[in-house]
Length: 484
Image (tube, rainbow, N blue to C red; front, side, top):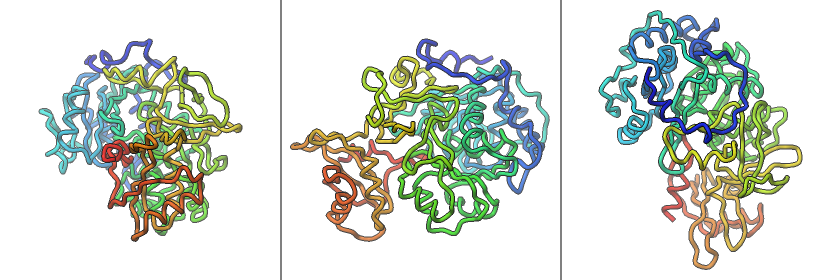
C-alpha cells in the first residue's frame, strides 16, 4: 500500500467538521458507479461495455493501491474508462486540464508524486512521466476484481485552477465522490435513467467531473462527453437533457438554436448574472440552476431547484450542507450584511501538504474566499471573491455588481472589474471590456451610473480582445490587478 497521499493529509484537528452521510466502511466508488444497466455513453457503450473497458485499464496499470496516476486527456469515453479503471485498481486519480502545458503539469506531477500516467496520444508531448501509457493503445477488454478500498481511502487529488496563485491539491475520498452525487445531484437535479448529461468543463475540473461522470453514472443515466468547441453540436447530436457550463457559454448559446431535449441547465465556475438567467428563461423556458461550489468542497453546496430559484441568487444550502455569513472573528452576521461565506457538510477541504489549510478551515468551517450576503428567506447572494471586494473612498463596492451592470449593455461581450491603485481614493474601479463593436468608455460609464449607485461606476475602462482565463474558464482577475 502506497501511503504518500495519506501521509500528506493535514492533521485531524485542521480538518473541517464533516456531516457524514451513511456509507459502508468498505467502498470503491468506481465499482458503485458501474453497477447500472442500459446506456452509459450516449449513442455508444452500455454500462457493461464501459465496465469491461475500465477493468481492462485497471489490469494494464499494474499499480499498488494508493499510487497516484496522472490522467491527461480531453473529455472522451476512453478518458472516463481510464478514470474508473484507476480507482478500480485502488489508485488515486490526478487529472489535469487538457490545455495545461509541460511546465504546469510538471508542478502537479511533483506535488502529487505521480508514478504513472495515462495520456491521450495528441498530448503526450506535454507529459514527462517515465511510466506513461497512451490511452488509445490500452486494451479494451478485460476483467478485474475491484480493489477492496475503504470509504475514507483517497480517490482523487483535484488541483485548484490557480486564480489566486499557486494551485493547491485537494484530497477527496471515495465516500466524498458519492456524497456529491447524493446531495446536489439527487436533491437539486433529480436525475432519471433517461437523462443525457453533457457540458463544457473538463473532468479534471470537479464541476466537469460531476457533470460528465459522477452524476450520470450514479443515477444510471448516459453521458455525452464533449469539449467547448463541440458543445452545441453535441447538444443536438446526443439529445442532451442536462447541461453544465459557465455563464459565458450560456450567454453565447443565447444566439443559437437549441434542442428541445434540454430540461435542466446548471451554471457554476463564475457568478451567473441575473440578466443572462432571465434571457435564458425567456428563450428556453428553463431557469438555470446557479450554484456555488469549489474544488476544496468537491462540487456545488449552495443551489436551488429551478422552480425555487431567485434570479441573481445562488440559492440556499444544498440538503446535507450548512452555510452562514461570518465576520472577521467568525461571528454570524445578520440578513443583508456582507461577510465571508462559511460552509460545512459531508465534504470539505483537505489540502495535500499545504500550510494554507489553516486559512481555508477555521473552527470547523470551510471559508471559501467568497463575500456573500443572505436574505431573510435564506437565499445566498454573491458579492465578490473576498480579495475582489473594492474599497474606494470609503465605499465597499462589489466588482460582480458592476460587471453585471456592464453586461446589460448590448455591445459588451465580456468584462471583468478589479480594484486599481489611486492616489486620491486609495483604489478605484477599473473595467476590462471585450466589446462586440467600438463603443466610448464614457458611454459605458454613464450606462452603469443609470443602473446602480453612481459611486460604483468604473472610473477607468480598458478595452481588450480577450480576458485572461484559467484552463477551467475562470477569469484571472489577479492577472488584471497586476496589469493595473
